[in-house]
Image 1 (cartoon, one colour):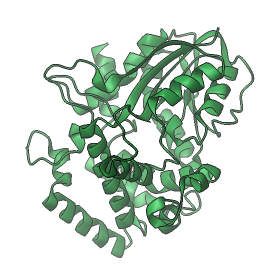
Image 2 (image 1 turned 30 degrees about the horizontal axis):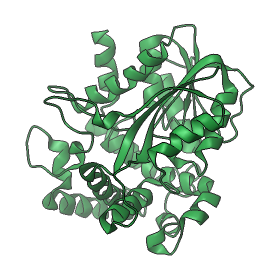
Image 3 (image 1 turned 90 degrees about the horizontal axis):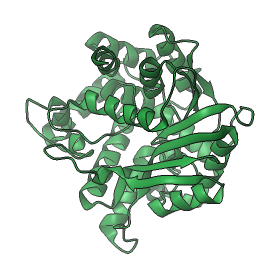
Length: 359
């Protein structure tokens, strides 16, 4: 088991050469990433730039595709292949916390090597490769974004997990699978991109076999969110703008949507509030620090922000990075501010845990 954890830990990391290669290749992806330089189009969909939530819901396909065309390479370079958060246990590294967070879902599902599992909203497939390696199961991931499919499938080949682990381009409102196909389904911080969560849950319910389980970590507003509080509203807006979301919903919305489509709810809770003595909250890694023990957080200090913006503007100028890279970085920085605000005020959670069963 330890060798698997170490292997998955390494899958979350890149050498300097690999990071440079990912960024350099981004310049040559104009055909695959047609919206890569259209940061202004993306920004126009949000309230601060004249857009509104109703319009984003209608155009969620464009919203999500534009966002991940812009953000995918930044996520992989800066965060790793698994695009999600995790509380960090005492003496645990960030990469170890990410893998453990995924393994928890596998344990709750009881995934067996003979199972056929769906990852609903898989990004570039970091979790499905980790869980495919760990459990031996066949895991299919769906994502709306074709660039993520191409990148993820290449990573599956590189990890010698294909074709048992694979990615498919699909809208999770219209899954391209027959009824009762999968033994289990999981989703990690993905359903928040939907304008209608009940509709996504309905599709998940359809493709699950009777008796199959669905588990998910959901991005939600908590009961502490006050829609009349300007700070709460600012945090919500920054998260939506910086993370490609149409309109964030409260945790109760998930419970209601699961019951509405026929699921038996086994458990729901805000996992961000789980007891974690000596550990760190999920948002701590996004807060500024000059500590040499956590160099990732230096980028959020005033000098780190200045130097990274200077570097990105320079390599964009000389053609080493795609046009708009500086604006994308600023978009993600605003998301970071909103996420930290929401975490500290406990008005937002990225890990509302839902566990449901198809009767």
